[in-house]
Length: 462
Image 1: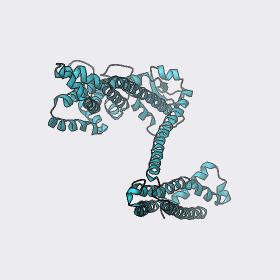
Image 2: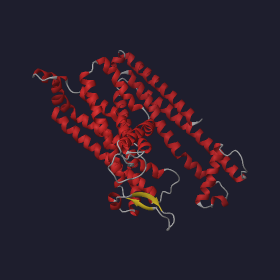
Image 3: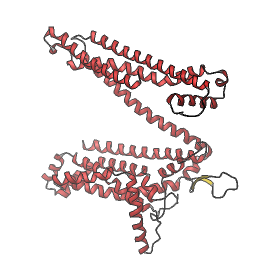
Image 4: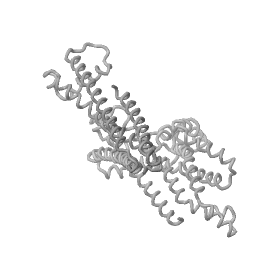
């Protein structure tokens, strides 16, 4: 039985377990006056039976499949001829890949040696036996658990407590997986970044004023000295993000105040979804808009004023990025403003305040922690944006704060460094992980600041 069919079978057994457990609960409670004599509702007895039927079998199923390939490969290699089994590790891996491709049908032509064909047949046989054994084991475990739990169902059985305990364990396991996944990502980036800093000093990376990660292939090669000063890249990121926030924060906040405090319900129901459509547009579309419309318009306007404007500029990328971020600020601010208790507004009106005074002196201060949190999340979004910068701001790491010049950002450089066939031992490639680690630290600091602000002002107004 294939793994897919086995999962479908297990699903059917689980459904049967729920039905039989629930039916058993009705049966054991009938002599005592019906379901009211049970400790828990009948559905909990069915759920308990279904959980015992599914969870142990799924655990065995997962572990079996996780280690099946390595175990079968070792058994297959042990059966290979001596001259193949003693090959160097890299050549033996190639032979193993050929055998696996032959088993999966990816090798459809060419001459195949009898030894490889025999190994492929052996591997297929082992795989069939493994799947059959797994099917028998999983089905037997599910049926045995179903029958065992069903036989233990009594009116005194605390089924709800057991079900809630199992669900709690599952929730903890899911949270643990998410946490360990995050830790794994951070550690992998940190490990590669440390390898980079063993080659390039940390001080040179943090305080260097030139970014040119192209490494020289020959000693006499010109223009490939390999400079890894991150300040131009960081400065470009801050410049583009600042322009974006100058666009997004005022427009987003003002639109949120209007929609929540001044607009009637009918207009709000139409305008808010239309505004949030901006958040659903792919960033590549924003990039096209920036490169084909905004950047030429800025260049023509600058030329008419006698100013020199690059064809790709931080201003074009920042303006379009700000438009993209408006829904983040607007939607979050609107939700926060609406969450301000009406009693605060009524109190201000009762003291004779006008609507504008109530908004500026009561509503906005009360909603400030949420607004600050939304703005910082929007900043994180701006720092991480890549596509718009690639298409509208360029790739040159210029040390400038002139928004009319070409700049680049951290995320764009990470993409550039990892595109194509790269050697993961070169400082050029490892520099991407150093930039990624720095970007992670910056966004982490922003999130911590947002949490601190929210908690501080929440205590004040609650």
